[in-house]
Amino acid sequence: MDTYDLITRNAEEVVTDEEVRELADDPDGKRAYVGYEPSGVLHLGHLLTANKLIDLQEAGMEVVVLLADVHAYLNGKGTFEEIRETAERMKAQFIAYGLDEESTEFVYGSEFQLDEEYTLDLHELELSTTMNRAQRAMAEIQGDETAKVSHLVYPLMQTLDIEYLDLDLAVGGLDQRKVHMLAREKLPEVDYEVRPALHTPIVADLTSGEGKMSSSEGITISMEDSTEDLEEKVNSAYCPPTRDPEPDDDGNERENPVLELFEYHVFPRFDEIVVERPEKYGGDLTYEAYKSLAADLESGELHPADAKGTLASYLDELIAPGREKLHELRE
Ligand code: NAL
Image 1 (cartoon, protein in one colour):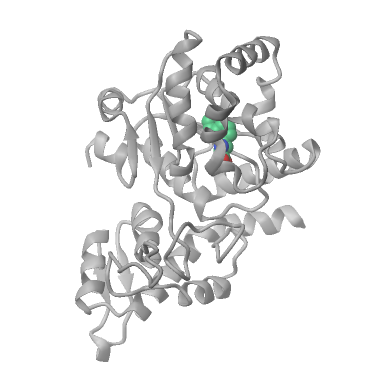
Image 2 (image 1 turned 180 degrees about the vertical axis):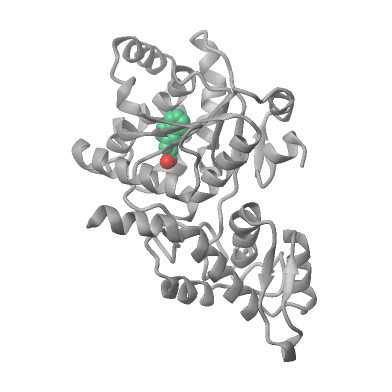
């Protein structure tokens, strides 16, 4: 796969394509980052961006993982001590998942976000940004609760981090796009450079195929799940034999979450996928590309039940090292 294709595979959006192409021409030593609010147990949402980081490392880039402790604090995720402890566990799970320890730099936000120069830059951004603009940038990250002043500071800090971490590419889920757009607009105003961004898709809710899979509602798959949990959850998933399901009766858009998980989580990490079937049902099926699996599901050659069983076992393999690490840390 050529470097540009590797960098952008499974990306929902790159901003801008021209800037990312330029990066792909000479990726060695370039720095990409993802920031995460520390959370005790990783879930598939975290792992989707982690897969992208693994792609970028393969392309020769350096990867910075920001353990965004101050951001989590501003977003009401607990006391500062609790958040720090959680961050350590998060880091251990990322390494267990396959982020290369040598070429991944883990940085705590609080290492630089409390410095005098940073603080003054932040205040300059506060001065030049309307509350309305900051609130809009934050809407998708924050959820439904009433916005606090901290929620307005949050996206401005994320904007500054892109400069302070000296990054060449910002990576995040599609829910980060408005913050990255704010950064593109604001950084030049305070005499800093604009950097490209790459956004990963948001996987649909497992049981309905609607909206997004999230830890706050519905079923989510996490590093804590046992093999049996995974089988049960994947078995209950919505999986019509198509990539493009019709909207539901209320007109809500739906996706096929089983296919999405194959595409975004399984195929990027395995060279081939084997669906094990008894001879009398046609014997094993082997896939090297997501598209052929999706086509077989659509044509009926691959039964949804077999697709689900296979998905559960590959997810189990991906999650197992992190699950063991979590058990170890609790002992
Ligand atoms: C991501 C987050 C927080 C701070 C960041 C700083 C720079 C780059 C990315 C960052 C967390 C993210 C979330 N906003 O919603 O998890």
